Length: 63
Figure 1 (cartoon, helix red, strand yellow):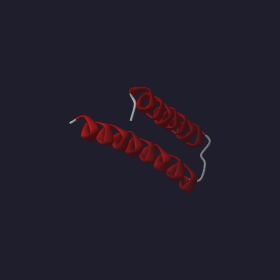
Figure 2: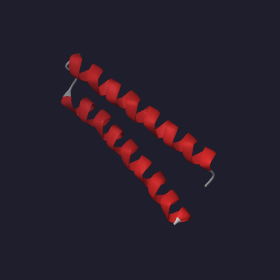
Figure 3: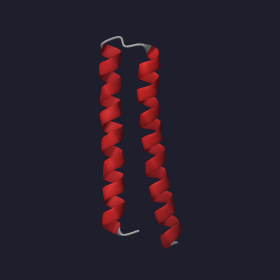
Figure 4: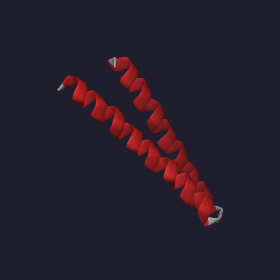
């Protein structure tokens, strides 16, 4: 995977993580149903796992 491609994937994943974290904060402040908040936080977790997968796959390709 090219370095530009890795940066692009990671940037997209990080933007998703940040957006969903902000959404969770908004949902909390508006006292949204807990199920909605948990679903949003699950997306944050998925984004973090996605970042780890990109980094792991790259370290295997280089090492």
